Amino acid sequence: MDKILDGNKLANELNLELKTKIDLLLANNKKRPKLATILVGENPASKVYVNIKHKTCANIGISSIMINLSANISKQELLEKIDTLNRDNTIHGILLQLPLPDGLSKYTSEFIEYIDPNKDVDGFHPINRGKLFDYNEELAACTPKGIITLLESYKIDLKGKNVVIINRSILIGKPLIFMLLKRNATVTICHTSTIDIESHMQKADILIVAVGRPKYITKDKIKEGAIIIDVGTNRVDGKLCGDVDFDDVLDKCGKITPSPGGIGPMTVHSLMQNTLIAYTNQESHRLE
Ligand SMILES: NC(=O)c1ccc[n+]([C@@H]2O[C@H](COP(=O)([O-])OP(=O)(O)OC[C@H]3O[C@@H](n4cnc5c(N)ncnc54)[C@H](OP(=O)(O)O)[C@@H]3O)[C@@H](O)[C@H]2O)c1
Image 1 (cartoon, rainbow, N blue to C red):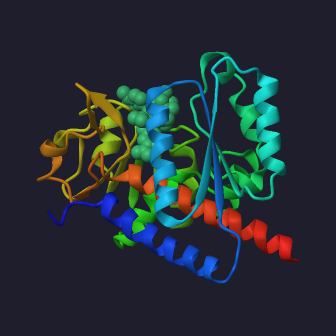
Image 2: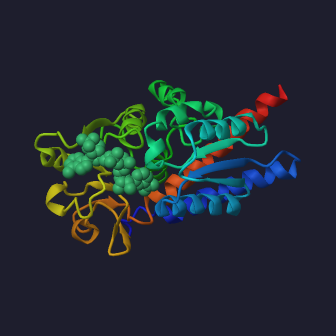
Protein backbone atom coordinates (compact mmCIF):
# COMPACT_ATOMS: atom_id res chain seq x y z
CA MET A 1 0.00 0.00 0.00
CA ASP A 2 2.95 2.38 -0.56
CA LYS A 3 0.79 4.11 -3.17
CA ILE A 4 -1.36 5.67 -0.46
CA LEU A 5 -0.74 9.28 0.49
CA ASP A 6 -2.03 8.93 4.02
CA GLY A 7 -3.42 12.33 5.01
CA ASN A 8 -4.77 11.01 8.30
CA LYS A 9 -1.42 9.73 9.52
CA LEU A 10 0.51 12.76 8.25
CA ALA A 11 -1.94 15.26 9.77
CA ASN A 12 -1.72 13.45 13.14
CA GLU A 13 2.08 13.66 13.06
CA LEU A 14 2.09 17.32 12.05
CA ASN A 15 -0.55 18.18 14.65
CA LEU A 16 1.66 16.58 17.29
CA GLU A 17 4.50 18.88 16.21
CA LEU A 18 2.16 21.86 16.68
CA LYS A 19 1.21 20.53 20.12
CA THR A 20 4.88 20.45 21.10
CA LYS A 21 5.25 24.09 20.04
CA ILE A 22 2.16 25.11 22.01
CA ASP A 23 3.33 23.18 25.10
CA LEU A 24 6.58 25.12 24.90
CA LEU A 25 4.73 28.45 24.69
CA LEU A 26 2.69 27.58 27.77
CA ALA A 27 5.77 26.38 29.63
CA ASN A 28 7.19 29.85 28.99
CA ASN A 29 4.09 31.48 30.50
CA LYS A 30 2.79 32.68 27.14
CA LYS A 31 -0.90 33.11 26.39
CA ARG A 32 -2.75 30.09 24.96
CA PRO A 33 -3.72 30.45 21.24
CA LYS A 34 -7.49 30.74 20.82
CA LEU A 35 -9.80 30.12 17.86
CA ALA A 36 -13.41 31.30 17.57
CA THR A 37 -15.77 29.62 15.12
CA ILE A 38 -19.13 31.03 14.10
CA LEU A 39 -21.81 28.59 13.02
CA VAL A 40 -25.01 30.14 11.70
CA GLY A 41 -28.02 27.82 11.44
CA GLU A 42 -28.30 24.07 11.68
CA ASN A 43 -26.55 22.68 8.56
CA PRO A 44 -25.68 19.11 9.69
CA ALA A 45 -22.50 18.82 7.57
CA SER A 46 -21.26 22.19 8.86
CA LYS A 47 -21.87 21.03 12.45
CA VAL A 48 -19.76 17.93 11.82
CA TYR A 49 -16.90 19.97 10.27
CA VAL A 50 -16.92 22.56 13.09
CA ASN A 51 -16.90 19.82 15.74
CA ILE A 52 -13.86 18.17 14.12
CA LYS A 53 -12.04 21.52 14.15
CA HIS A 54 -12.78 22.05 17.87
CA LYS A 55 -11.75 18.50 18.73
CA THR A 56 -8.42 18.99 16.95
CA CYS A 57 -7.91 22.31 18.78
CA ALA A 58 -8.48 20.55 22.11
CA ASN A 59 -6.04 17.74 21.17
CA ILE A 60 -3.18 20.11 20.46
CA GLY A 61 -3.79 22.74 23.14
CA ILE A 62 -5.52 25.52 21.21
CA SER A 63 -8.39 26.97 23.20
CA SER A 64 -11.57 27.37 21.15
CA ILE A 65 -15.07 28.75 21.40
CA MET A 66 -17.99 27.94 19.15
CA ILE A 67 -20.55 30.68 18.63
CA ASN A 68 -23.86 29.20 17.50
CA LEU A 69 -26.24 31.69 15.96
CA SER A 70 -29.78 31.27 14.74
CA ALA A 71 -30.35 31.07 10.97
CA ASN A 72 -32.69 34.05 11.44
CA ILE A 73 -29.97 36.38 12.70
CA SER A 74 -29.80 39.71 10.79
CA LYS A 75 -26.85 40.84 8.69
CA GLN A 76 -26.16 43.61 11.23
CA GLU A 77 -26.16 41.20 14.18
CA LEU A 78 -23.64 38.93 12.46
CA LEU A 79 -21.40 41.90 11.59
CA GLU A 80 -21.56 43.02 15.25
CA LYS A 81 -20.58 39.53 16.41
CA ILE A 82 -17.57 39.53 14.07
CA ASP A 83 -16.66 43.02 15.30
CA THR A 84 -16.68 41.83 18.93
CA LEU A 85 -14.34 38.97 18.05
CA ASN A 86 -12.08 41.30 16.01
CA ARG A 87 -11.66 43.52 19.10
CA ASP A 88 -11.13 40.67 21.58
CA ASN A 89 -7.38 40.38 22.26
CA THR A 90 -7.74 36.85 23.61
CA ILE A 91 -9.02 35.60 20.21
CA HIS A 92 -6.33 34.99 17.57
CA GLY A 93 -8.34 33.28 14.84
CA ILE A 94 -11.89 33.72 13.54
CA LEU A 95 -13.58 31.17 11.29
CA LEU A 96 -17.00 31.78 9.79
CA GLN A 97 -18.30 28.34 8.79
CA LEU A 98 -19.64 28.33 5.22
CA PRO A 99 -22.07 28.01 3.57
CA LEU A 100 -24.28 30.52 5.35
CA PRO A 101 -28.05 29.98 5.41
CA ASP A 102 -30.11 31.28 2.47
CA GLY A 103 -30.99 34.73 3.84
CA LEU A 104 -27.35 35.60 4.61
CA SER A 105 -25.36 33.77 1.93
CA LYS A 106 -25.59 36.69 -0.52
CA TYR A 107 -23.53 38.75 1.95
CA THR A 108 -20.80 36.11 2.40
CA SER A 109 -18.05 38.29 0.85
CA GLU A 110 -19.04 41.23 3.08
CA PHE A 111 -18.78 39.08 6.21
CA ILE A 112 -15.41 37.70 5.15
CA GLU A 113 -14.09 41.20 4.41
CA TYR A 114 -15.25 42.30 7.87
CA ILE A 115 -13.05 39.74 9.64
CA ASP A 116 -9.72 41.24 10.76
CA PRO A 117 -7.30 39.90 8.08
CA ASN A 118 -4.79 39.12 10.86
CA LYS A 119 -7.36 36.76 12.39
CA ASP A 120 -8.56 35.32 9.05
CA VAL A 121 -7.38 31.73 9.63
CA ASP A 122 -9.47 30.44 6.70
CA GLY A 123 -7.41 32.62 4.36
CA PHE A 124 -10.44 33.97 2.52
CA HIS A 125 -10.03 37.71 3.22
CA PRO A 126 -9.13 39.65 0.03
CA ILE A 127 -5.90 40.84 1.69
CA ASN A 128 -4.76 37.29 2.35
CA ARG A 129 -5.90 36.16 -1.11
CA GLY A 130 -3.99 39.10 -2.62
CA LYS A 131 -0.82 38.16 -0.75
CA LEU A 132 -0.85 34.86 -2.61
CA PHE A 133 -0.15 36.84 -5.82
CA ASP A 134 3.24 37.55 -4.22
CA TYR A 135 3.56 33.89 -3.22
CA ASN A 136 3.00 34.81 0.44
CA GLU A 137 1.20 31.77 1.88
CA GLU A 138 1.19 32.80 5.55
CA LEU A 139 -2.59 32.86 5.95
CA ALA A 140 -3.56 31.00 2.78
CA ALA A 141 -6.70 28.91 2.30
CA CYS A 142 -6.56 25.67 4.30
CA THR A 143 -7.42 23.02 1.70
CA PRO A 144 -4.83 24.12 -0.90
CA LYS A 145 -2.27 24.63 1.86
CA GLY A 146 -2.98 21.10 3.10
CA ILE A 147 -2.56 19.67 -0.42
CA ILE A 148 0.84 21.36 -0.80
CA THR A 149 1.95 20.23 2.68
CA LEU A 150 1.00 16.65 1.81
CA LEU A 151 2.84 16.71 -1.56
CA GLU A 152 5.95 18.22 0.03
CA SER A 153 5.91 15.89 3.03
CA TYR A 154 5.84 12.92 0.64
CA LYS A 155 8.72 14.56 -1.29
CA ILE A 156 6.76 14.79 -4.52
CA ASP A 157 8.74 17.15 -6.71
CA LEU A 158 6.53 19.71 -8.45
CA LYS A 159 9.17 21.39 -10.62
CA GLY A 160 8.24 21.16 -14.30
CA LYS A 161 5.36 18.74 -13.60
CA ASN A 162 2.07 19.02 -15.46
CA VAL A 163 -0.45 19.61 -12.70
CA VAL A 164 -4.10 19.56 -13.78
CA ILE A 165 -6.75 20.86 -11.35
CA ILE A 166 -10.42 20.17 -11.97
CA ASN A 167 -11.87 23.06 -9.95
CA ARG A 168 -11.70 26.87 -10.19
CA SER A 169 -13.29 27.88 -6.87
CA ILE A 170 -11.74 30.46 -4.50
CA LEU A 171 -11.56 27.67 -1.94
CA ILE A 172 -9.41 25.27 -3.96
CA GLY A 173 -8.45 25.88 -7.61
CA LYS A 174 -7.58 29.57 -7.58
CA PRO A 175 -5.23 29.56 -4.55
CA LEU A 176 -3.60 26.36 -5.83
CA ILE A 177 -2.56 28.12 -9.07
CA PHE A 178 -0.18 30.41 -7.16
CA MET A 179 1.06 27.77 -4.75
CA LEU A 180 1.94 25.45 -7.64
CA LEU A 181 3.49 28.19 -9.80
CA LYS A 182 5.65 29.15 -6.82
CA ARG A 183 7.01 25.59 -6.93
CA ASN A 184 7.62 25.75 -10.69
CA ALA A 185 4.85 23.41 -11.78
CA THR A 186 3.01 23.88 -15.09
CA VAL A 187 -0.60 24.43 -14.10
CA THR A 188 -3.81 23.73 -16.04
CA ILE A 189 -7.22 24.58 -14.59
CA CYS A 190 -10.28 22.73 -15.92
CA HIS A 191 -13.97 23.39 -15.25
CA THR A 192 -17.40 22.78 -16.74
CA SER A 193 -16.64 24.79 -19.90
CA THR A 194 -13.33 23.07 -20.66
CA ILE A 195 -13.40 21.48 -24.10
CA ASP A 196 -12.10 17.90 -24.30
CA ILE A 197 -11.35 17.80 -20.56
CA GLU A 198 -10.19 14.18 -20.77
CA SER A 199 -7.22 15.10 -22.98
CA HIS A 200 -6.04 17.43 -20.18
CA MET A 201 -6.53 14.80 -17.47
CA GLN A 202 -4.63 12.21 -19.47
CA LYS A 203 -1.57 14.52 -19.67
CA ALA A 204 -1.50 15.16 -15.90
CA ASP A 205 1.54 14.05 -13.89
CA ILE A 206 -0.47 15.22 -10.90
CA LEU A 207 -4.26 15.36 -11.08
CA ILE A 208 -6.12 17.34 -8.38
CA VAL A 209 -9.86 16.69 -8.46
CA ALA A 210 -12.51 18.66 -6.55
CA VAL A 211 -15.76 18.50 -8.51
CA GLY A 212 -18.11 16.92 -5.97
CA ARG A 213 -19.10 13.90 -8.14
CA PRO A 214 -18.54 10.35 -6.90
CA LYS A 215 -16.48 8.09 -9.23
CA TYR A 216 -15.85 11.00 -11.62
CA ILE A 217 -12.27 9.86 -12.20
CA THR A 218 -11.81 6.36 -13.60
CA LYS A 219 -8.63 4.69 -14.90
CA ASP A 220 -9.32 5.52 -18.56
CA LYS A 221 -9.03 9.24 -17.65
CA ILE A 222 -5.56 9.15 -16.08
CA LYS A 223 -1.98 8.76 -17.26
CA GLU A 224 -0.02 5.67 -16.17
CA GLY A 225 1.78 6.52 -12.90
CA ALA A 226 -0.13 9.75 -12.28
CA ILE A 227 -0.41 11.11 -8.75
CA ILE A 228 -4.06 11.56 -7.85
CA ILE A 229 -5.20 14.04 -5.22
CA ASP A 230 -8.87 13.44 -4.43
CA VAL A 231 -10.33 16.50 -2.70
CA GLY A 232 -13.97 15.57 -3.28
CA THR A 233 -16.20 14.84 -0.31
CA ASN A 234 -19.49 13.18 -1.24
CA ARG A 235 -22.05 11.21 0.72
CA VAL A 236 -23.45 8.13 -1.00
CA ASP A 237 -25.88 5.86 0.87
CA GLY A 238 -24.77 7.46 4.14
CA LYS A 239 -21.06 6.81 3.45
CA LEU A 240 -18.39 9.37 2.60
CA CYS A 241 -16.46 9.02 -0.67
CA GLY A 242 -14.33 11.17 -2.94
CA ASP A 243 -14.49 12.04 -6.65
CA VAL A 244 -12.17 9.21 -7.68
CA ASP A 245 -13.11 5.58 -8.27
CA PHE A 246 -10.33 4.48 -5.92
CA ASP A 247 -10.39 0.73 -6.65
CA ASP A 248 -10.53 1.29 -10.40
CA VAL A 249 -7.50 3.65 -10.59
CA LEU A 250 -5.31 2.06 -7.89
CA ASP A 251 -3.31 -0.23 -10.22
CA LYS A 252 -2.70 2.45 -12.83
CA CYS A 253 -1.88 5.48 -10.67
CA GLY A 254 1.51 6.20 -9.07
CA LYS A 255 0.15 7.50 -5.79
CA ILE A 256 -3.27 8.46 -4.48
CA THR A 257 -4.97 10.14 -1.53
CA PRO A 258 -7.94 8.23 -0.14
CA SER A 259 -11.14 10.13 0.57
CA PRO A 260 -12.00 10.18 3.42
CA GLY A 261 -8.60 10.10 5.13
CA GLY A 262 -6.62 12.25 2.68
CA ILE A 263 -7.12 15.95 2.16
CA GLY A 264 -9.82 16.40 4.85
CA PRO A 265 -7.46 15.94 7.83
CA MET A 266 -4.75 17.93 6.03
CA THR A 267 -7.23 20.83 5.72
CA VAL A 268 -7.89 20.76 9.46
CA HIS A 269 -4.14 20.63 10.10
CA SER A 270 -3.69 23.78 7.97
CA LEU A 271 -6.34 25.52 10.06
CA MET A 272 -4.38 24.69 13.23
CA GLN A 273 -1.18 25.89 11.54
CA ASN A 274 -2.86 29.15 10.45
CA THR A 275 -4.21 29.72 13.97
CA LEU A 276 -0.71 29.38 15.39
CA ILE A 277 0.69 31.73 12.72
CA ALA A 278 -2.06 34.30 13.47
CA TYR A 279 -1.32 33.94 17.20
CA THR A 280 2.43 34.43 16.72
CA ASN A 281 1.91 37.51 14.52
CA GLN A 282 -0.54 39.12 16.94
CA GLU A 283 1.31 38.32 20.15
CA SER A 284 4.75 39.39 18.86
CA HIS A 285 3.17 42.61 17.59
CA ARG A 286 1.73 43.28 21.07
CA LEU A 287 5.15 42.87 22.66
CA GLU A 288 6.70 45.60 20.46
N1 LIG B 1 -11.47 17.60 1.72
C1 LIG B 1 -11.69 18.86 2.08
O1 LIG B 1 -11.21 19.33 3.09
C2 LIG B 1 -12.57 19.70 1.23
C3 LIG B 1 -12.58 21.09 1.41
C4 LIG B 1 -13.37 21.85 0.57
C5 LIG B 1 -14.14 21.25 -0.42
N2 LIG B 1 -14.13 19.88 -0.54
C6 LIG B 1 -14.90 19.20 -1.58
O2 LIG B 1 -14.39 19.59 -2.83
C7 LIG B 1 -15.43 19.61 -3.80
C8 LIG B 1 -15.47 20.98 -4.46
O3 LIG B 1 -15.72 21.97 -3.51
P1 LIG B 1 -15.93 23.52 -3.93
O4 LIG B 1 -16.43 24.23 -2.74
O5 LIG B 1 -14.74 24.04 -4.63
O6 LIG B 1 -17.15 23.33 -4.97
P2 LIG B 1 -17.60 24.23 -6.17
O7 LIG B 1 -17.43 25.67 -5.86
O8 LIG B 1 -18.96 23.72 -6.55
O9 LIG B 1 -16.56 23.88 -7.33
C9 LIG B 1 -16.65 22.72 -8.10
C10 LIG B 1 -15.71 22.90 -9.28
O10 LIG B 1 -15.75 21.73 -10.05
C11 LIG B 1 -16.07 22.05 -11.40
N3 LIG B 1 -16.88 20.97 -11.96
C12 LIG B 1 -18.02 20.45 -11.47
N4 LIG B 1 -18.47 19.45 -12.27
C13 LIG B 1 -17.58 19.37 -13.29
C14 LIG B 1 -17.49 18.56 -14.46
N5 LIG B 1 -18.42 17.63 -14.75
N6 LIG B 1 -16.44 18.73 -15.29
C15 LIG B 1 -15.51 19.70 -15.02
N7 LIG B 1 -15.54 20.49 -13.95
C16 LIG B 1 -16.57 20.33 -13.09
C17 LIG B 1 -16.85 23.35 -11.34
O11 LIG B 1 -16.73 24.04 -12.57
P3 LIG B 1 -17.44 25.49 -12.82
O12 LIG B 1 -16.57 26.49 -12.10
O13 LIG B 1 -17.42 25.66 -14.28
O14 LIG B 1 -18.81 25.38 -12.21
C18 LIG B 1 -16.13 24.06 -10.19
O15 LIG B 1 -14.98 24.76 -10.62
C19 LIG B 1 -16.70 19.22 -3.03
O16 LIG B 1 -16.89 17.82 -3.13
C20 LIG B 1 -16.36 19.58 -1.61
O17 LIG B 1 -17.10 18.82 -0.66
C21 LIG B 1 -13.36 19.11 0.25
